[in-house]
Image 1 (cartoon, chains in turn orange, purple):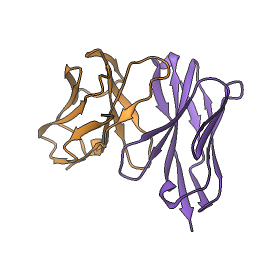
Image 2 (cartoon, chains in turn blue, orange):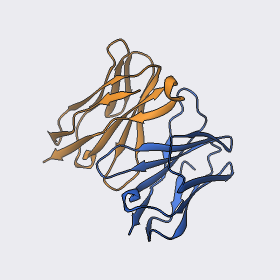
Image 3 (tube, chains in turn cyan, red):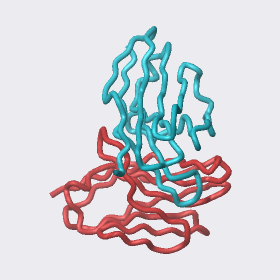
Image 4 (cartoon, helix red, strand yellow):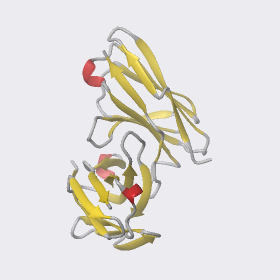
Length: 114
Length: 111
């Protein structure tokens, strides 16, 4: 199983809503990532978890809140988002953070904030 | 910081060979990855280089020159399904060993 799954595929939410994005992998990977990708732009790293501990937070606004309940699951909690937060949110995982570990990406959640 | 450059767009003919270049500047280079991304889909891993030289995988090859800060992805026997964006990504020790992506090269394969 070399798959990273994400739900939902599409999400439309108002600026006052609270929603969560979910990501799951069963490859035994110990590092998981959240990326944000705007149209025709490269993925931008938001958060990195290593062994279920937040390793990197790339100065992301607090309206995005990550959570790693266990080594297979990664959530991204959304609250009071802005229209400019509309983007494709990609989850990825890798065996570790070290050299040579390629990242496997999920299909993404396309988020629209109205 | 990291600076990664790729051409924005390229067009090539079905059956031909195309080379997509990537130049980079990083403080702590620790490997270079190429990913393919079809529109609206997730990036998929194509290749990895950490030492100088050529890595070949079927129709795809990737080359790295660390002294020149340069890589290329070579696609042979192009097929229509190869139309996609190709992302060059560099792992940077100075950036907590994370991946930093170039803007991607949108390749269009024409009949």
